[in-house]
Image (cartoon, rainbow, N blue to C red):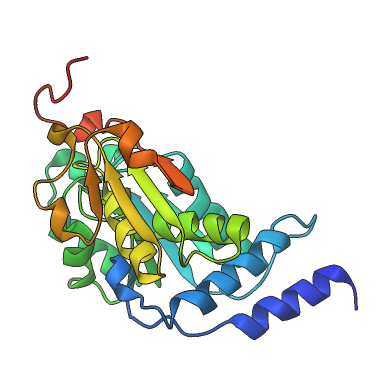
Length: 251
């Protein structure tokens, strides 16, 4: 059997139903459902390096990408992934849609729902927007980042990268550093890493660490040298200027 055919068979063997109707947060997964999903993603890493990267797993399905916030990597990744799986893809920009004329998110949901998409991928600046849409449409909703809430698909990607580098995430000490207060990626990573047995540390100045972070099940440090001692992995976060209100750091 050729390598491309073998990889395709491996992917088909690892397909399994997603445990929920939507993927809105890290809490939609659990320690039992995470490994098979990562195994499937691992198989796709090699598949995506082939010269031929086309499957028909989603033939006849329609995926709509609805991004209310600027995005390069996430929007392109979802679009390319859907196309490689054989889906029809439509990318909607709010700047050129009726939301620019004052249409509400609920109005938009009703309009899109009438078009009968199969998957709606949503990025929005308001926390809870993806969950709200999931209640108003008849298709699956995937959260591609909502406000300061969560970014579960990014956390899955980070988890896959760590597993490929270390073999096992359990037992790793991972430091997440920087603007944790405004980071939806940090929240999803804390949840998923803890779920898989990693020890998570949060490092940042008091103004950039949530006041309830000590209840996240993490160690909290405000001194970077102290927080980084003994860590296996360091995740650096940029300042989320688009979600900040006021000056939270000296410069």
